[in-house]
Length: 461
Image (tube, rainbow, N blue to C red; front, side, top):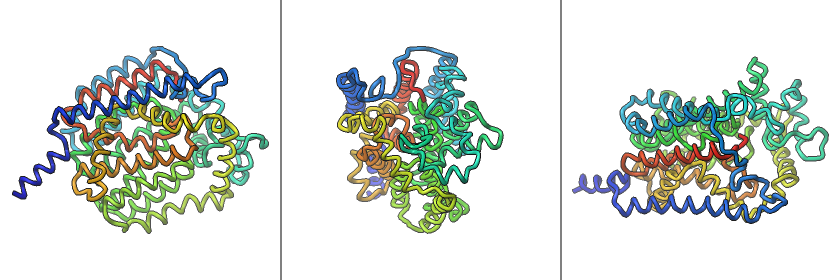
């Protein structure tokens, strides 16, 4: 009887045997996603007006209507067809390490092909060289120490030589990444773009490592094709936020390995998790919220053992930057002033607090929305006792969703969240592992969303 009960619980939780009612619920959840995007678009156009109050050209996305095809179009179609046709089977059969590498390579192929729809120059090399981007200020870091000491003096509009938007909107760790690349001979837009795509693509492997440690290998394998073919790749390509997403993802992966002690040197993993989290906080102010998924990892592992080493590692970057003369808290306060001086002071909170979620829907895809519906349905049981892989997955996904919602409520993320929230959204996509059956139809839907957005809207990222 006990064996039968366990089998019944696994069937009920993992939903490998779908019922028509459950399938309808998935379609309803996806329909809600479609309705949300449609409403955001219609309401956005209605309130945009001649004064462009939303400060975006194609609500809820920051982009311009620009139907086109390009050199990357055939490649993107081929990659999508191959992942839809062979991804689930390969994910189930490949040896684990081969799966990690294959998923990373597939994600790179998907991201590069989407970026190359606009050609190498516009799709890769130029994206990080435009007026608000990091590469425009490389020369101002000739004396890094002096620049860090005076960094906060140039954040607000009206200050002498105020920083362009993205430099002002982030701690200096973001810009310093590209300064260091330039110092080792990898300067210019092409190297910066390749760095963001290649490093950003590794985030999918980090998510798989985390899923295997906290849930089980079967669950990780089910998520792999969806991670490789995520619509978020439209914005992962040459956006620095894709690089940020990878740093945060590997921080959580190392934390999961340390907490579950599924790595040879858990102490080193814990220290590494802290180092990466500390650096994350100096890439983007808002990514301090990744502490919420981190807390979820420790809850799932039922241990606080790695915490002292994690905290020790997390202090390294703040201490180094503080000694160098940059005050993180002062920088954030100045950023808030700058934010409301610009588009953030004009964009209506009442619209963006829900339209942000519509932009997120486009970035994660309808399959993820359907998976999130299942995760929310499991939430009461998962929070009480995450005793099965599916319930544990629900906890991890919901922790990332909580971080995203806190960012939304803060009012410091009004528009552009399809890019800014990439580090959070990456952890929503594994909810697709909750979908039953072969799921090739859902995969095809994911690809369709990415292809349509990428070929119809010029996002600028």
